[in-house]
Image (cartoon, rainbow, N blue to C red; front, side):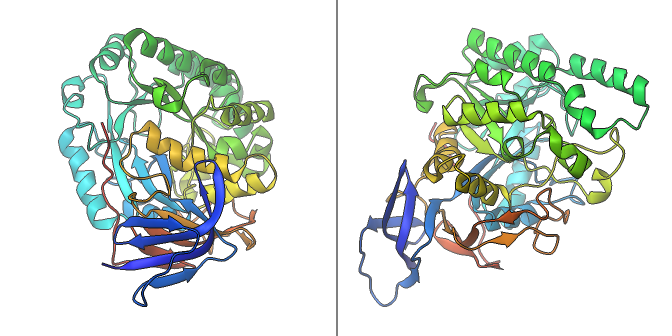
Length: 445
């Protein structure tokens, strides 16, 4: 059994930072102590001055395989994720074909088994007409159910209210939702097309996909969850107003309704459209500085439970089209942790809180087995970070298949030096181990 000792590191875990050693044996964390002695056969990494985090768990990514692999694939994007300290991901169903049957879902698992650098799970996609198939989903082997309550890439809009209520009433699995009210969006879009034609300014995006559109949909989903007792998780909040719908008065394990915010909604605001243009066109839209401030407040007071990426790459050619033709979404998995550490260095969030929201809470919320914490007996999904080594994002050091990043030109004040997945050193200072792949995530349900 291979063993590795990480010595003299600052361990960030469960609200504390302690100095110590971590011993890895095989796939697991074997021992955590102040000073561990080992035999000569154990590989030793002197991590003096570096910080050791649990591997990040990203609960919302779009890796574009199958059917959209000109933009990305599971191999390319999981590789970028590993370089960004993300050791486990949950991928969305709006591929081609969509993951709306058990057969298509299992095909994706088989691809990931052969090609994913990170640990993986997928969501089953709910539609207006696949309830019978949805109910076959195994809660111990699949992350959850994904519903689009506003149209997005892949045209999986669930707009039949009777079907929606039936889905909420019929499954005990976690239901994750994209919340934007389609009628409101279409009305706003029609008004802007009448005013501007096809050349709608990108600054209008948060007006078209408005606060009202988000709030109407989120509040409706939450009302339905309360009526049916469904386990609801609302993806990518983008407005301060929506945060009032969520509570922070009970532990996460007891919450039936939870929320996520994405890195881009914490980093960018509508002032950035002038410089970044359609490169920061997302659904839901990046909104105002006031919204960004409200999202940060709700994140820190625990109304928002998780930080994720909604990594959704498109080619640069696709993204630089006119407003109505440019698709929404952007690549983020390589740069999410560095961006959040930048925020931490500015005093916006502590490292301990960041780890809670990006590592611990996804594991708790999705009931993931033995991941998300630095604990003896848990899988050794670990990330070493040098908080004193800076670098600048550029096309040359961007690993996404699409070849660009909305963070181009940003100086990051930290460097990820090592990433372990299931005890294996997969990434070390720019070098990947291509011989070992991640594992299918399992769930304690």
